[in-house]
Amino acid sequence: RAHASTVGVPSVLGRGAAGLLLLRELEVLSKVLQDPEQPVVAILGGAKVSDKIPVIENLLSFAQVLLIGGGMAYTFLKAQGHSIGKSLLEEDRLETASRLLQEAEQKGVRMQLPVDHLAAREFSADAEAIHVTGKDIQDHLLGMDIGPATIEVYLREIAPARTIVWNGPMGVFEFEAFSRGTMGVAQAVAMNLQCLSVVGGGDSVAAVGRAGVSDKIGHISTGGGASLEFLSGKELPGVAILSEKG
Image (cartoon, rainbow, N blue to C red; front, side, top):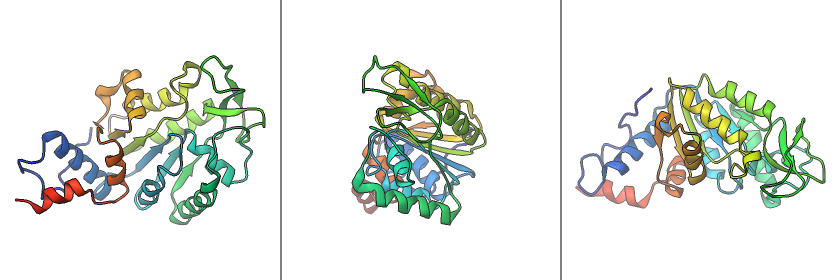
């Protein structure tokens, strides 16, 4: 497994005010941002596009592939003109989603969206899982997870990666019937022993734990929202003040 260097964080290394966990976090995330081993694959899920916009914009500058899942995928699909039924949608982010898709195309980054889905008639742990074989979801259904064909596509993209960043589940993995996408991604990331894998976000961390592969992940980020901000290229006040001391 690749090891993170201290690129970008010499100013805080060795300072008594920064704990070892923070230093490890800064080392790994700085490695990803400034000197990642290529190819870089970013896996982004969760409910909202709005939570990930700055991260996506920054990832487009150095990632080769963005794999999109979770509720945010439906806003991107809607922006492409696809039907998404009753699936989660951020209408006020459709224009942003279109812009990000265009930027990815211009920069030669593959932004991969689900090609099929597991859907349900209602949001419930007991709901029947219905396989939707194309990108379009019928009006009476809501998307709950990426489908088996999408899992295969995503696993093929993950396999050759040398740097992987994963933040956000692929579906409602808390419900057993809709956990296959997230569990499949967790297993695929863990099986790629040649890469530096970084998993962040409470749901993604929970997913690798549930899949029993936490010990096979290069770095599990405990930074939460702060690590997302760091990956978006923002300077974090807590880090900046450490850099100024000494």
